[in-house]
Length: 432
Image (cartoon, rainbow, N blue to C red; front, side, top):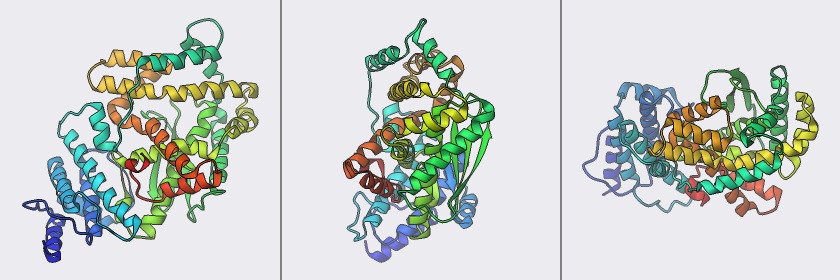
């Protein structure tokens, strides 16, 4: 097909028409594909309120989506048509970022089509859904793996009674009194920001607002608003434990979601005018990078024993807690972090029909050692977000492996690699 023919084909797609047959890729019209991608995503968001996690692009594209008002089936068809235009291979662009962009658009469109298929009622098993939406293959672990972790945890928490009760008694001692939550959390955010800024120049004027909420299925959330501004919300339905202060401050703020979104906006939206980055589809491969980098960002900000020292010397006293418990708490949470993969297994078996709701709740209580209320909350999260759970643990481990391969043992080189990951349209397949 001639260049004129490809341009006409793209014009038809942007107008919402289908081509009669797949065509060869054309490197020229990525901007037009990107605009169409955004319009399709906003259309899908009208049917799936959780789909568009953030949008700060042109109002004209929102208006175009509202005027077009596509059905879920039409979004899928249009996304698949754009994939056909992009083709199976990436053209030999001289700019590495443009090559990444071409592939990013294609894979994100594939995920969009898969989400549309799910919304239309198609069923996928857990692993197929994870691959289609997040470009990743979650590992399988037998119960014996988690039983061995529970045995290690048992040795750290001596005393009488079942392990779950001993664990809860110990963790109850880590709860920040409600009157001190704000002080502890803001102290943690300030430390995370300072440690991040020592290695990553942050965009000028970047900022966040902090709110405390109740009645959500999540513990905390970053709502990115554009112009380097985030709203961070923290759920107070349940007690905030002292180690969660660093977790949430790094994950939602620095160098986590806030920094990731701000760097992408600076490098790709402001500097290159790539409109697709102004829309973040939650159920997409981008989420594995987002959640994985946010979780690994905790270790980036507080490598080695630095987190333990900061919690013991700063956060425990601010919270009015016994600093002598900090070391034991660090050992306990390290094991529980590996137990996080049990949530994947519960989600897989529950969503694939191997466990009913009661069985999934019991399994969550067994392997996460949580109360019935917290177990039920986790099942509600799985009901809503399904295979999204892989992005936290598998995403974290994939990002960690990639940064360690790129940066080695040099802290500076690791930060360089981490910043590069946060500033470009990478996909999970890049981390393998």
